[in-house]
Image (cartoon, rainbow, N blue to C red; front, side, top):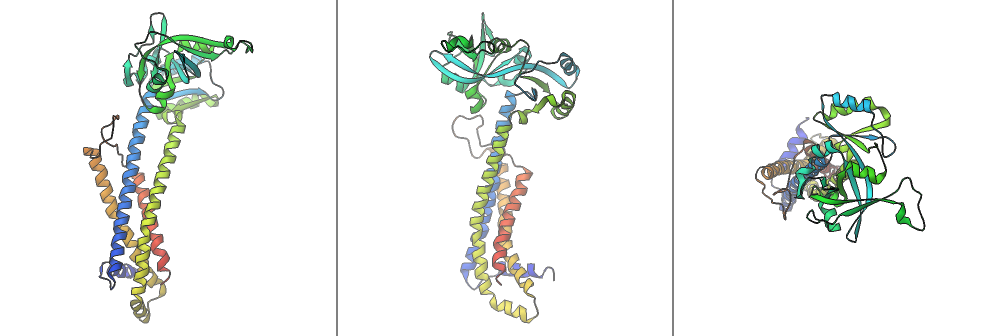
Length: 395
């Protein structure tokens, strides 16, 4: 008895109907669910591919771990803690940074920019050097310090590594009172030239410049303070937990994802929005299942009367039509899953759809995740079930 509703549902699904329009609508429902499922899986995989590209680019601009103060902008590194870190075999490098929002001026052009001062260890370990598109990874030329700017920032200020005219950095003095008669006297300033230009992503390119930490200490009037300590390691997770226990609640030990938490949070929200929009399209397509099942219920009135005369209970009759409608969506979903997985694999292997313009990759990146597969199955199967359940209650 347990398989009886499913057997009836299979018989009704594949048998010819008295009205061919029912077969047509059912076929459209299967095709629609297949296309919707495949589209859902493919677009989520493309989003994963772009997310991977962004993560890789951000990882080149950040150290694996970063120690920041829990309160305030700067702190003085404790020599005992630094010695402990240097003695840890998991730590391959330590660098100090001093970062602040400053005012840049060059040849009459101005910009508010994020300037990051790094020490010699950071200059050696940073992977930003791998993203240079012009100039050299050099932080001094003659008597003047040099900065490495993002491509967007360099373009907005009209900077070029081959120009010899220096730019100027301004920041309000921390020790002098503001003069209302001569506000410029309350500003600290320094001059530097452009050593090179890097390109990582649009956000960093438009706002970041890297300079020697000594220059930032001069402008900000600090002596030994730092904004953060960057830790270079290959054992990120284990070391992060140990460092947080060692440093206590006064400091935060952040991995790469936590350093750019707002970016990753935005990407999660965007992916959720994409999933909901595509699922809404699947819901619209699933109304074909609702229509075909309503018509099938009308056509099978005589069969229902016969089954009732033979003693079939009402829940059995409802189960037959519930399975009938749900099978349409499940068959379409299975076809869509196979097609989606196949297309994602072909894109990964052969790059069937190229990226337009000059991009870092030649074809659209795709990454298929098991979690996306699971959410696709749950979303489409639940949609099909609801669309079959409503008309089946009217038997």
